[in-house]
Amino acid sequence: MKVVILAGGYGTRISEESVLTPKPMIEIGGKPILWHILKIYSSYGFNDFIVCLGYKGDKIKQYFANYALHNSDVTFDFSNEGLMKTHHYVAEPWRVTLVETGKDTLTGGRVKRVKDYIGDEPFMLTYGDGVADINISELVRYHQEHGKAATVTAVQPPGRFGSLKIDGKQKVEGFTEKMKGDGGWINAGFFVMQPEVLDYIEGDHSILERETLERLAAEGNLMAYPHAGFWHPMDTLRDKTYLDELCKNKKAPWSKW
Image (cartoon, rainbow, N blue to C red; front, side, top):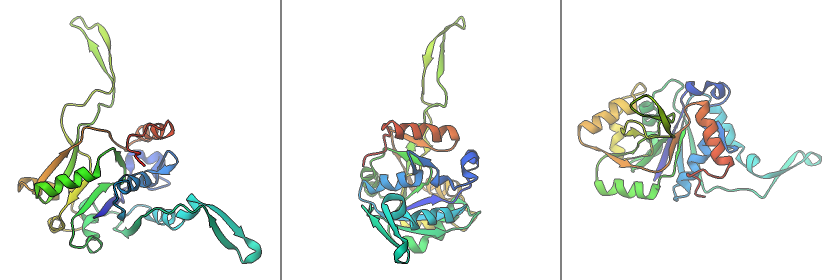
């Protein structure tokens, strides 16, 4: 099953970093977050990726074109016509197709543009800026069992700030950190879709999260896969710092490889 990754947005909410590099290439733990996402899927045996490029897509192409240089020791022999030799080459079992889907194309349109690469088989889809400790095999099994057109992973995100415990006289009795939000479920990406979902997308200006998913839901053709474990997007610089610290301290819940 192929995995489609949306990696073409501008990343305006993390502009401190995205002004120079596309959001999926922003590093956490010394590796682009896109690399972490590929490793999540790869750890469950899914290694065929289609990456939807847009804003600064050339940076992503350059990264994969030079993957050996990033991950191996290299000898450049300038006495022998600049011959390059890699040592201890790290070979991932990945097949990565990088597709230019337009600088201003919206999320649904990007998926539609890679239709020829997906083919007529079920596929997975996620965003290029979020990590989770989801069991991908269980997600796929759940999708196959319910028989609907699409599955979206649903999470209850933690509150952004700790909360105060206040008594009836406005006295602070203590603090509670990282409480859940209002109890609502949100779209965390990590979709599984049947190929007919592509027929719900009209063109470049289609928003996956609106026209497509809302229509599927109205028809009773969209199921939620509840995930109670770790999930975190990289929307802001604060998010980037948090995820980076988890990696550096070897506490990244999604890192199962």
